[in-house]
Image 1 (cartoon, rainbow, N blue to C red):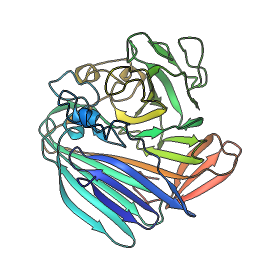
Image 2: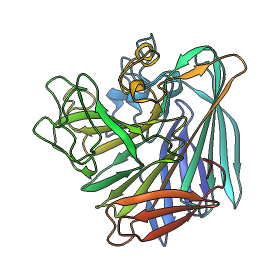
Image 3: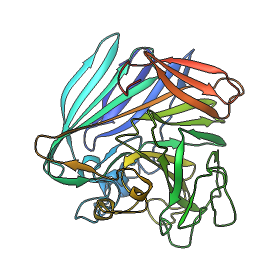
Image 4: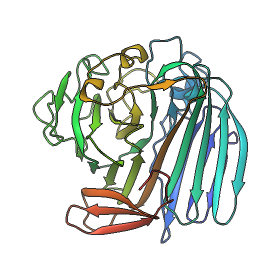
Length: 360
């Protein structure tokens, strides 16, 4: 779209929509292949949907990855996922060279009195995009999350950094139930309680006609939080990295045709949201700010804003061709200027990485 800005470097590129701060499109090129890991809703070109002011802007333009503050339905007079995902950002800087590209934006609205800036960076021949959101000042507790969505054309396999627990909220996303049991909790991701028996949270697809949501809570002492998605039809490996001290929860949204109403119309299928956040799953901001089922496991569920305080939320998305025969990942770790991905059989994939971005 003409309203979007583009960053393009050798081997990678992306598009950002400053009207709502969304990273709408992301691609990486390897050996003549272009990998596009992120999802875009089927109604983006539907004029009736785009003209429907009753729908929040983030839903009308549902695509890619966006920053939520507060996350979800906050219980406040705000659009879902807050103003960062529903209002304009000012483009302060765009830099592109043969070695890399950078876009710096600032939200035109304050978030609970805080100033919010976004920096998105690409490096040439580096299959990763680096995002930093910084909140300065403000007042009170705030939930935050990234909201990337992956399109799953067929089967897939998900692997995660060690988790202490997975849990569903008290109620399913949509009336009539879901593929998972609600409420439920388990430390065994391969046998999580389901509506019709145990289900495997490390494999895809799930039953059609459902919308499901489950929170995965990082294990104690984790230095790097990660999710790896191997897509069979696309024959690739998609990676999501975070600092578990800042974003201790990974929320999975399985969107598989469970919403029959407009604009979903039962057609929003094969979508996997991997939402790294600091929040009590789908609970409101007020519920996240007091003891709740997620915080009771020992992790924070809000950031505390205050005058003079800075919060940096860093996140990485990457994608590469799938090494032959790979299905599940044993580990992902940072080794200086390298990201080392190890398959369950012991094979390694070493990728260039920006030293110090998430530690290591």
